[in-house]
Structure formats: C-alpha cells, structure tokens
Length: 79
Image (cartoon, rainbow, N blue to C red; front, side):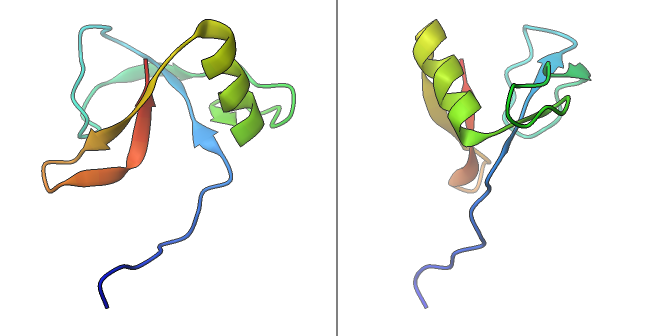
C-alpha cells in the first residue's frame, strides 16, 4: 500500500498563540485561548471548512502545509 487515508477532518482548530514569534510546526508553541466561535460551528476553538475559507478569502491569507520533520504533515497553517 502506497497511500493511506486517515480520514478527512470536517473542522479546523484555531487558537491564539501566547508568543506570536513562535513559528514551530511541531505543536510546541503555547497558546492562550481558542479562536472566537464561528457562525456555523458556534464553539470556541473550532471552525467549519466554510468558516475557514471565508476567513482566508476575507483577510487574503495563505494556507501552507506544515512540515512535521518527517515530511509534510496533514495539517495546514494559515498566516
């Protein structure tokens, strides 16, 4: 087997970094609070795909695949 699908997330996690200078993609950056609830998911720290797309388009952001140190991970960071 060359490829495996571990499932597709139907949501995204969002948070505010404790230190904006921390850019590590390994999950070691401390965070203070989850993102504000979106209109659809209505839960702190969770956004639906359409909410994420709206934020990217409205704020003209870019999503990049994170590198876990063992190749590209299944997560993206929006900056």
